[in-house]
Length: 478
Image (cartoon, rainbow, N blue to C red; front, side, top):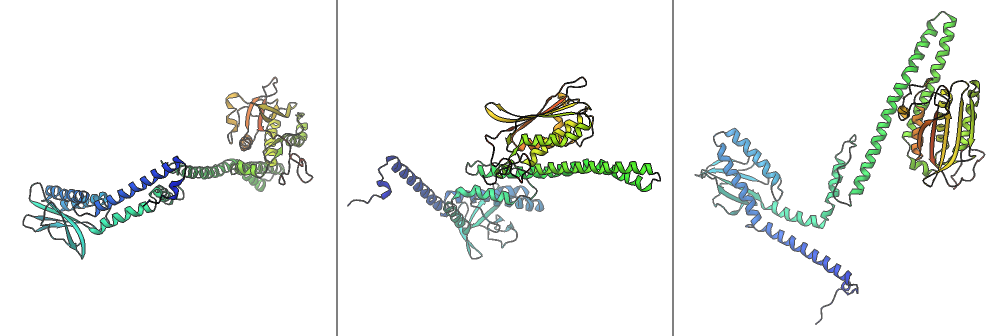
């Protein structure tokens, strides 16, 4: 009679058949281990059962004799010993599934497990005895103390051992490998809503991507909260001065008898409102930029012609420059497309060009240029705005991008937010911004703001739709 060979073993591939045989051998070994564990726990006189009960009983007997004369101390000692027993016991037992009784040589009870019926003193020493307590089977063990004055009997219900066997099989059946995931779930569920600290790292490779994603989310939320806090702090700091000036001028207007004083106060009042409005607009721009993610911006097809935005900025500043006899010029490409929204590109040009014109003295010069260049073989759009102002010392060129920082060479009153906005827009566009020497002259070295953004390979179509502002392309249909 021939034995039937399973179809899976009739596959011609030797490596596959070897893999299946090894897998079956591992499963068989696991089943054997489960059976051995079942027999070891279920046998009354198994080595694990005897060892656990004997050690517990000996601890109660020997350690209690040291505190026999001081009853309060003895009871406190027994309570702590029971807590340790319940915490370390194998199998894991529940409250109420453990009893002890301490007796003298005459069989009189000295003390017992509190809050439960007292079990009788043990008669058979140094062996596991099955007894009945409250109608249920228990395993007990009795030993004498080292001095022989007292005996200790401890007991655990048979149900605790049976539950341990069931748990063992259930853990295997329910894929014990998922236990780390349940642990991680409980760790996240137990968190307070304000706790944004990283989740503890795990050693399981399958869970590391999940933990990294959670930590990344917590970090982004934490940065968002910190950005909101900075926004409110910056708003309070920046608006305090103009609002105080407005309040002072309003008092002059309402209380002064001089027409000239009231006229002067009204002009200052209007100037304070204008400054507060400009500061608030820039603070809102920073808050908007802090909340934006470059991925969302690129996904929406946000593109702009930086050259067109630069020419528009020059036109807007032309009358202001002419009043102060400042030469304002543009030179460079006709089109230069970058992955920055038109609104952000216009804001970028406006802030840099506004600073340049404001810091340039009467009769000075401001040059604006946009060109396509290459850096390490990568096409780049470079915006360079140079002026003949006092310039920025090299040791301050990094700090001027901080919010509310004004260089010591500044000759005008600004909000100190313009370059902070510029840096944030450039970061969203994956570009860089730097400060260099500008148009040198007798009174200073000048200043040049150099912005570099990744260039697009080709211009989108249509380039200039009728309903879009100059420098903006509608790419929603592409």
